[in-house]
Length: 88
Image (tube, rainbow, N blue to C red; front, side, top):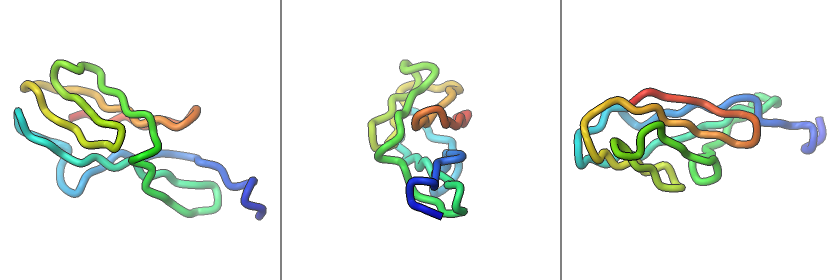
């Protein structure tokens, strides 16, 4: 398999613990990419992060999320056409 044939097939969002964070708390989210050759890589610093409600949660380019208010929010990590969502 040539290196150019290896492609990203999926992304999973996770953290060292649960995906719950208290108001004013901070959590490091990780976006782990799986590739067509079976390998995986932490893409936390290279994916595009987005949240469904930025009044509840803000997220930095490196995956550090800060809880601004109490509530549920969907977090998305995407790279090209591949994306993953997690509910926090």
